[in-house]
Length: 336
Ligand SMILES: Nc1ncnc2c1ncn2[C@@H]1O[C@H](COP(=O)(O)OP(=O)(O)O)[C@@H](O)[C@H]1O
Ligand SMILES: [Mg+2]
Image 1 (cartoon, helix red, strand yellow):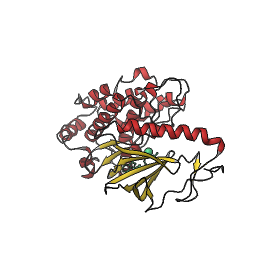
Image 2 (spheres, rainbow, N blue to C red):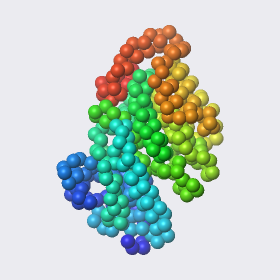
Image 3 (spheres, protein in one colour):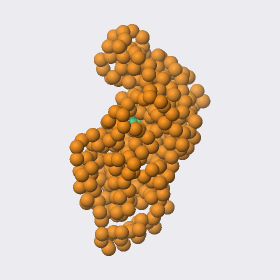
Image 4 (cartoon, rainbow, N blue to C red):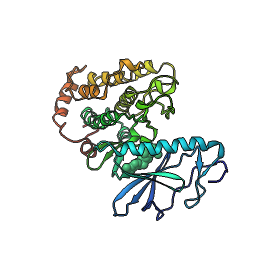
């Protein structure tokens, strides 16, 4: 490593590059923490390779050049590096259909790589954007939202059981696979905070999805922080856009106003669940993922505001057996 200051987005590894025995096929994403590639393992398996390369701390002039970290950024870079590696280690212990599988992790090129199984599909964010652009009364159907989040919550429950938090749950970090699974990805912001004593790094703040305690130093962060984000994701599935930023004043009253026109389209039960998950006071939220699951999977009491919608919901529930992505692909996520 040299001492030049990072100036621009680090260059990705070129297709065909070998790293740790894996052959890079192409870059598929880049974010604050690094670059994600589609790659092929030594045994020919298709994998997703995530390279730790935070743009704010490191640079790389070209795919075959060394990683450059400015001297004054090195301590932070190393902390992130270790944390990325620890996350790989922790995630590798979780084997669950609704959590991305970490197959391997290794150090090379002055950085660290996570090898994950490659998931064919699209993010929930892409589904929301597509559905919202159709301008139907509902963005996603209630039955779709229920089955989708039932899966996400199964994954999140296991993450919490392993004393991890996700801390960046948002529709872009939920992949809906072509074989009909909702999978939590991107644990880049996750920290083993439940076991930590004092050495806590403030995670990224994503407006709309991050809970209010994420923007205030000293406020405890815990499973309730992920539960807030789950509520925010369900809100997005109903409205087609994110909820108000929890760091801004009047967030709660804006949220309550924004859900008004959802009554009649979705059950009060689901709307109340969103409002409850997104309470400003963590104590007022459901106390665990399990309690959110119980509410979500209880059939709605169908306290509808209009009889017409009641009749519509009655037919909709009969198709609940459909897995979420089948419903999405068949276009059933939208209005009939
Ligand atoms: N296991 C995976 N399989 C397929 N695509 C993936 C996988 N992990 C990440 N991706 C793709 O890479 C993008 C970025 O990955 P992500 O882990 O969310 O990192 P970040 O948001 O920090 O850049 C995702 O939106 C997705 O398109
Ligand atoms: Mg992401």
